[in-house]
Image (tube, rainbow, N blue to C red; front, side, top):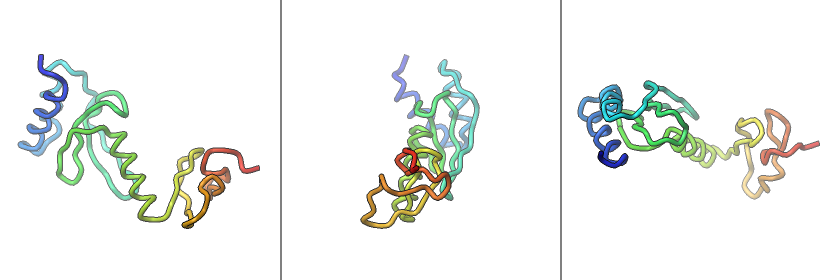
Length: 126
C-alpha cells in the first residue's frame, strides 16, 4: 500500500481536477481510510471546507477559496487566528477563547479579557 502522504497528495490532485472535495473523499475511502464527511469551518472572517478524518490534527484535504491543499483543519484554524491577532492587535484568551485588544508593549500576561474578565493567560484576575 502506498504511504499516507502519497494517498493524500493523490486525493488532493483529484479534488483540484474535479473542483470537489467529495471526489477526494471517495478516493480516500476506496483506499481504506475512514472519513466522516465534508465539514465547513469559519473563523476571523475566513472559511474553508475539509474532509473530516476524525481528529483536529489528522492530515486531510482542505479547500479555501477554491485552493486545495494537504493540511489539517486545526492547523488552518491556528494560522487564521494568529494572523487575525497580528493584523488587528488582538490576543486570544486562554480561558474563554475570545479575542481582546492588546497594546504594543503590554505584557500579555497582565491583559484582562474583555469577555470573561480573567487574564488572557488563563489565570484568574481576582
